[in-house]
Image 1 (cartoon, one colour):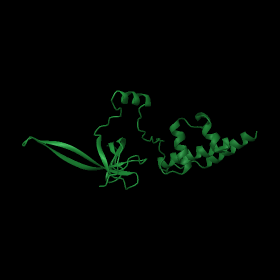
Image 2 (image 1 turned 90 degrees about the vertical axis):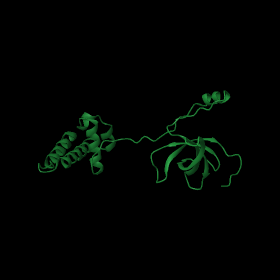
Image 3 (image 1 turned 180 degrees about the vertical axis):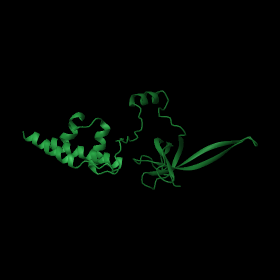
Image 4 (image 1 turned 135 degrees about the horizontal axis):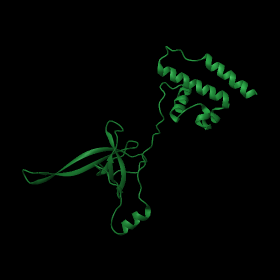
Amino acid sequence: IFEVFRLRVVAEKVAMLAPSADMPSGHRRRFLGALVVAGALAVFGSFDSFVSAPLHARGLSSRSDSLMALEAMRGGGKAQRFKPKIPWVEPTIPEELAEKAKEEGFRLRPKYHSQKIGFVISDIASKTRICLVEYYLFNAKYKQWYKKWKRKHFHDEYELSKLGDVVLISPIRPISKMKHYRLVEVMKNATHTVTI
């Protein structure tokens, strides 16, 4: 009997708070979402029981309606659908395959478009390294190969590379003004101290 009385009181309060017709549609939708959440909280008693209840028991027709109602309750400006951010995880090769390939004289590693091999010339900054990438070009007129090089800033999240190490880097979204490469693998560790 008490639950029926409480539902009737909530229904009367919601009827009194109905949005006016001249309210913009976006505001009206957020307002109604907040009313749905408020009514559900009054019925279910707590936020956890409201979230764990099925959609039809909450008075919502779909998952997107429930997310918009929750966003309206949190006070967010525009109600948006929830998009989880998936962090990048470097693909790894099983140890057994890597050891077997090493015994046969091969190295297994992932291949990336525009990957570069260079050696670290600076490890002063935190999580940022600079490597020197050397490459050769051919001059068609003089039939001669000539060497060029570029300094590439790359992101080293766990600071695995040290000064003098040979590293494999690949492109990534721009992280800063100069840094749009990331470390894939330290191919060879420096055996002695390098001074540059």
